[in-house]
Image (cartoon, rainbow, N blue to C red; front, side, top):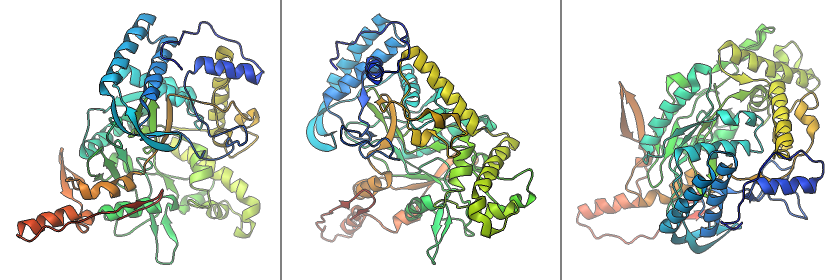
Length: 509
């Protein structure tokens, strides 16, 4: 897409049933489309995760940054955020900034690396807020996108330390939680620099249950967090003496080129919703519970060629996320056998009655959240809302929104309106929400031997935060500190070579 050949589209276009006409309109309105992983010979539309989804955390060639920046500014003009004069002036400013900041480094292109020129530019708060909202609207896996205009920006781009990230996040998340009346908000920390991997959070979500592997091989807690739990323990966290299924993991923040900072979740956020059922007293004895909100913290935002790698995103739950998936999945908490007994059936009837148990658990989840005054949307309401939003978009723009039926269709099936809509156009506009190229734990393992910063534990004392060293890290002092100790004792300084072996899952030295 040449930087100088973008013109504004005027007027709404009626919807069409012809897929080729629809695709032309998609291209007309969305100048930058990211790859979806599908080819003429192979379709990944039904896969949970596409093998070559775009990721943040990688340097892109200079021309890619330039084109995506201009395309993003054009979208602001097209949507009436900028006038034509403002768009042209801002485009000139941004291209000049990109040219001034350009430098040679390792860049990624089509899953391969080479030495090339790349750059970055600084977005205004208005541009960033607009980009976040567009990225949410373009998120093919989210059913609540009709609320994208309500998304708020918490701009934390001025914070460049791990300690600052951790303390700022706790304060701002508490405000956005708003005593249960949740305000959807993205907490944006500095973007990835040309020379770094960007700030990151170790946690998959701000609130996570620990998962402990016991001596007999069984799991206490959330099986999906066993590795993360062990990584945080290795960093220096001490779990509760009496471990339970519902222990909240601390938050681990890691600024670019800084060591991790670990902080416990404050009381205002750690209260759990006890899952109860108004019609089955035995249900209450199961001890099921869940945290009050989802806040994904390992995903990033790709906006106009700028990559934000640390962007926790708070919203609210849909009942099925907890009742049908998190608590019910056999590879998570596997609660349905317990629920079958609680609603009065013998465990031998588990398979025959599991659908009934699932429905009752789902009902109990939403009832329990509403009893505590915490926002939680019902599956049918969310599905109907999405269908209306998609229809209105198609009527106005002439094409349907991108969506992934695997994610959008809740597990209940045909009673949910979105289930009947079938497939949607398989395209991915930018700005977009995407995964990170690098695992934060592996990134720390690779660089901890060459940094002067040490991981710290944050503790609240009165109105102030104080830091203490993490003992787990001190027990494995990097060679840089051993060399300093040897030098201070007057001994000969040894020569050391470190070779790091890493894969997608692990890193060894």
